[in-house]
Image 1 (cartoon, rainbow, N blue to C red):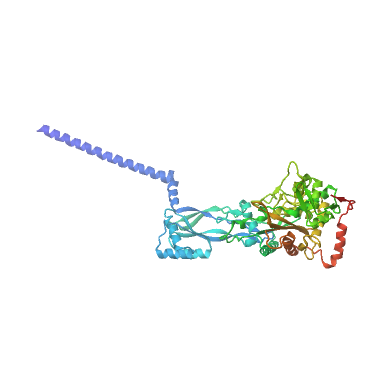
Image 2: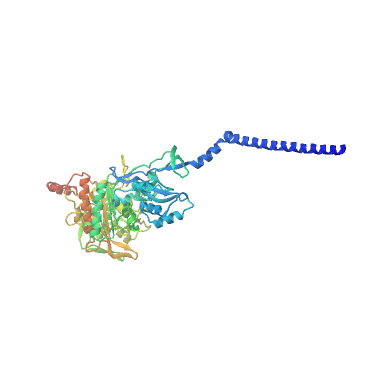
Length: 591
């Protein structure tokens, strides 16, 4: 009996031992868990307290971009040519959008888009948190959209580029894309200067993405820097109006005009046809984009005959009165025959220019050699970039063969076998007007002293200008370029257009280049009319009148004192006679 009791007591003791062991095991586990939790709590709240804060901020705090507007472009007097105006962009978070057919229809109406397009736009981007609904609209239209108070539809401030001068200055100014990145013209060439640098700010948002509070500024926005162009919009409007009217009147393919300040090299006007409106590019054609005055090249024809004459005068072997025998109005160079409009007989250098004698110019060039004539062309900027930095500028063609063939020398002397753009040709006349000094051509307004390079003797330049004056007087080829109350000078040119198969017999470019006033030039200008139709197609008939009308207005706009008033006629005649340089070989005939 006692044995059974002892066994039972032993069993009870074992059970009690197991219970105690389980108790302390559970207590140990719970204690350890408490310690771990306390350690983790201390770690999060003391050691690594930024973790929870960061997790909270990640769900409520966002960084938003502060847009910076692009720099303004103005003309030389501060007239705005390109400005960035504040607008609104409507965007949406498709994941938050909850709409019915009526709400969607009203949203489409206020956005002025089709309901079908809007539905497709939202449904195809359901997984995204940001899509544009309509960019850069007026604040009033954006307000009408946000007034609907639709979930997931928001607006934000942006800037839109606007061009007050429209198509008048479009080829120079250019334009930007919707993100205000330069695409053409000065906008592209000076994009890094004009572009603004956006800022950043921290904001507190609710779960729907709405901004509750602006917290702090991370980085302030830096607006782009402004740019002052050399253009004088008064002259620009005048040149644009006259060029457009002439292109329409002659049913021409295209046209260009460039006006330079002879003292500074600044481009006062640069216009082209066809043009385009940078504020509305929905029907823009590629051909209208080109700034033809810089990108398109052509053979300058007779407009560069003064270069050959200048090279001759510079040698000292020729003077304005030197006689050249052009009889019988043509002569052969190798297998080619060079012709004048008629037999001018024995004429001096001034008459060669005023009558535009190919024979006389060719004989002078052949006497000088190709190297001498080429050197003068090169010094005047042919075959080189003008240095404006304008995108797409063409440098033209000025060949310098190892061995000159006589026909190459002859054709170069009267503007064939050479190609230039309108700006290069204007640069050449600028040098003549600036007494042989060549300042750098610039589309940007220049300040301070201008470093000009001397490329021609001043006396030579003045003598050539006097010859150019005779071109617009009675008996010259450019009489329609005359300007009332001002003495001007220039040279007309008519060249065959070049097509796929070479020269086109019935297509021409009508040219006129000149300076005004002739005694103390203020501007140099070039007019190019491409493909005039009808009976009139010569440079003296088509391009010269444009020069006359534009110079007449430009002289007054630039406050240039008239030098050809009726009371001054006699004095002007005497002055011209005295200025005409005569040399001892006036009676000797060359050629």
